[in-house]
Image 1 (tube, rainbow, N blue to C red):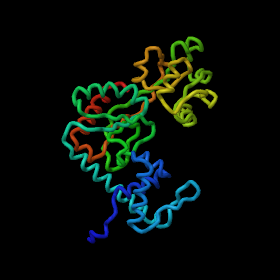
Image 2: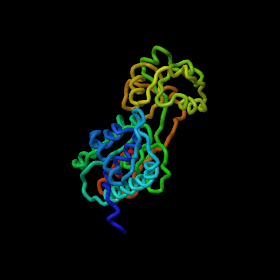
Image 3: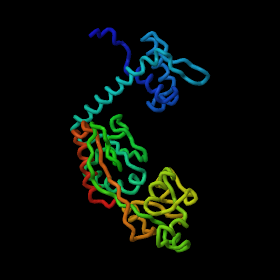
Image 4: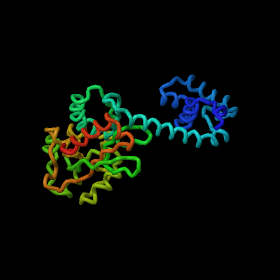
Length: 298
């Protein structure tokens, strides 16, 4: 190998890739935790080192040149290799300290996880936990998180997944809301009530109506992308909401609607990267969460 031909800095290549992925120098600088001038100098240094122009400025936008496009796939491959190196190194760590990122839905993060984290603090006080509360699926292979709690089983071969529980879900509303608006005794009567949506209301209607309901967009006049906000709306007498029994059990002011209906059931998968599973701290947290979620009503 001609080592003299490899003369540019990986940080420069990373600055170039971040600019492409984030869409601007300022956004890339924020993503990498740098200042915009520093990142701009790194991109300029890469251009000087390779003697090519990577971006053209058109108005306020940066547009990749043909040289930049040809370089992009190679830099992405470098980034993937760097991620694999980081994963391997993290997997070899045998200390019970350091940071672990756990991603779960905002509702799970707010109402279920804290009890497990309290136990973890007692067992491993030097482990730093960063909870990524997100309702979208974060990519473990790109190190957006180390451990994920999901409702669908991942299909990537490099991920380890364990089915730890099956959550049960019912309809809930505050007792004061039901006192004022009546307690529905059938799915037909549910159509006369206000519902609190979270996420995509059209998708929620598609999932609920096959159960026997006849809901429309008119039933969902309040809602939020954030499940925690939607749950607080329901607790403040604004309507009926779909919620897991584990979360509802911690809210004494909430009452199950149609208590005799069969629960909606969905799986709880605990997932981590195969190489991270060899790390003592990852294994400790993974096993603790598995034990907790297996026993917990979620």
